[in-house]
Length: 390
Ligand code: SF4
Image 1: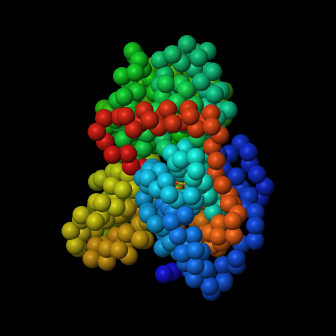
Image 2: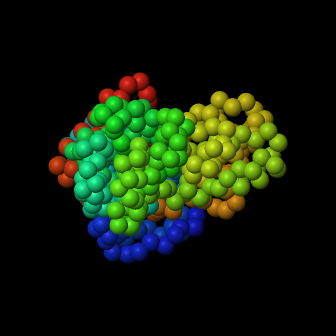
Image 3: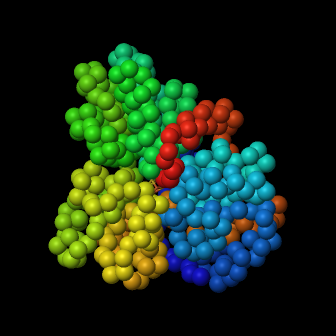
C-alpha cells in the first residue's frame, strides 16, 4: 500500500456552473500527513460492506486504486456499477463526466459520489451545451443541420450526451468510434458528422479507420463566429470536428517519438487515439486504455515500449511488468491534474461521511437529461459487434 504526493495544478474556488464540473469541496478533509489514512479508509470500507462499491479509473493514483473494488475505463466502470444494484453508494474515483455516466446507468436506489468535485475533465469542459446549441443553430442557418448526425465521445458531459440523444446522434468510446461513425453515415443521405468534443479522436478515426482525408475534416472553433468556417467549407466537409482535446494526450509530440526510436533499439510506440494525428501517424499501435493494458500484458519479456497515455497508468504498467522495458512518451511529467484531485484524504472523507450517514458530493443527473442521454448511450450499445471500452 502506498501514498504518493503528486503535484497538482491549482484550481479555483467557488462554483463554475457553466463547466461540466463543480469546483467546490465542502467539508473538513483529513490532512494528507495523517499516518492513519490507509487504516481509516479500510475501516470505513469494512463498516459499509456491500453497501458501498468503489470504482477506480486506470488514471487514478495508486493510493486510491488500492481501495477500488474494480478498475477500468469509464464505460466499463459505469456498467460495473449498474451490475451491483445492492450497492447503495457508488464512490467513483475518476472524473465528473464518468460519475454522471454511472448515475445515468445505475438504478434509482443508488447514489453516486465523486470524492472531489474539482475532479472535472478539461476535454469535457471544452464543449458546453450553450456552445453546441449555438453551433447547431449555425448549421441550421447554413442549411446543413438536416444532414448532420452528432456523435459525442464518452468523455463529455451528460447534457452533451443528451443533446446527441435528442438530435438523432449517439455516444461512442475510443474502442468503437469507427463503428459509431459507420452507423452515423448510414443515418442520412449525404450525412455529415459533428464529432464532439475531441477533435483528435474524431480525426484519427475518420482518416485511419474510415479512409477519409484531412480535406474531409474541418474544425469547428466555438470561440469564432460561425465556428471560423465558411458555408462552403461546411458544405464540403464530411467530418465537423469540435475544437476540443485532452490536455494530457494532446501534449505528446511527434519529435519525442523520433527521439525515443533513436535511443531505444526496437522500441514499439503505443498511443491512445486522443493523441494528435501527427503522433498517431508515427506510432506502431493505437488504441484505448484497455487495449494498451492488454497489449503490454501480451507482450514478450524483453520487449521495449514507449507509451503515450496518462502517467499513472504508464507507471503502474512499468511496475507490473518489470520484465519489459516501458518508457513514457513525454519528456516531462504528464499526469491528468483533475484525475489526481481524487487523493486519499478525499476518499477517506467521502467514505467516513457515508459511514456517518451523510452522502457528500453526490452526482445526480436530472431526469430529462438522463432520459435523453440514455437514448444516445443505447444507440451505442446497439452498435454491431464491438466491445464498448473507453
Ligand atoms: S486524461 Fe484527458 S480526457 Fe481523461 S480526464 Fe484527464 S483531461 Fe479528461
